[in-house]
Image 1 (cartoon, rainbow, N blue to C red):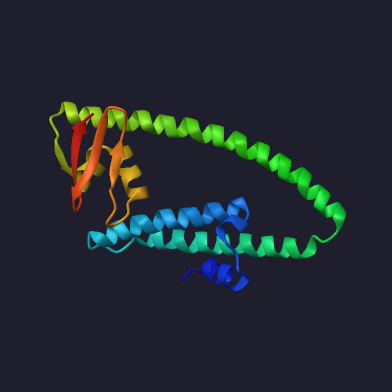
Image 2 (image 1 turned 30 degrees about the vertical axis):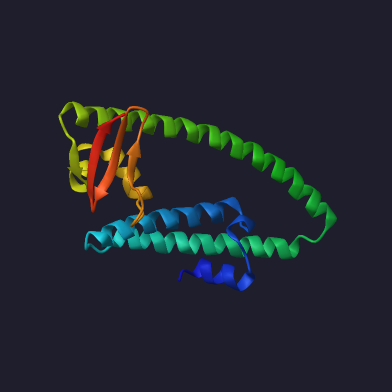
Length: 176
């Protein structure tokens, strides 16, 4: 169990109660954990870099939660609450700008995936292993790796192509 999980349990906190920075760290931990599960499914242990990343994210999430708890305990003055409301409005505006920028990145990644799948399909690939995806379609591999869940439907789909896992680490490519 991670330190941030223990702290959340002790304080009776839910993910939605936490500041955005802590939520982001926790989401990154979950994402990395899916990758670790995928590696362990292959019989491999996570690299030292992944283990270090998980440790760093856990520490950061814990710091963010502690800071949030300290701020909640010290912000009892009404003036502080008014200031917090002003900051919340500004934070919401900044979040909306960040979401717009993130959409552009997602679209760019979608085009890259479409291009990689089209190339594989044009090369006559109908069935491919995860190791070959890593070599021939890095963007597709990255998306699959980041979102991989054992026992779930894994793969990527665009408006024209679908790459779906049919058996353990074997994917089928089809044109829609």
